[in-house]
Image (cartoon, rainbow, N blue to C red; front, top):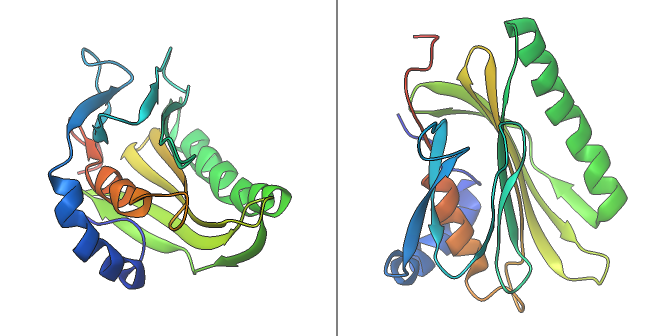
Length: 184
């Protein structure tokens, strides 16, 4: 079962815009490398890619409009350590948003399942320091009981963000874990 990111309300916007995005050129990115893939995403060819140097580091995609998607995975030594990592991700997100954005409106956190892997996401909206509207997404997916993938997105949905919201939705929905979840 594949779960899509963001909310059903936002999904209406994507239905119209996704048709144009589907024709855009993409490239498959592997985290951390193609030889040791933990997950992959299909990225727009015209977004800037930051390479990943090691597991735990962030890989990022950035549009020329300033929208950014970041991905990483953390390998933990135990399930308890993985739970602490999840708690750290979910606990730090609201604080980070309060420090860097205004007019923040967060939806309730939602449980998600991506190809049998459990996770959760928190989506919302706000304004950047210049007063531009932004959409947020913070999510985690348990790739295995001891490996946590983290996804972060700040998207400019209007004005500066020429279809960035639809493109980001397409990228996030292409998230594909590899191998067994280890919990099945």
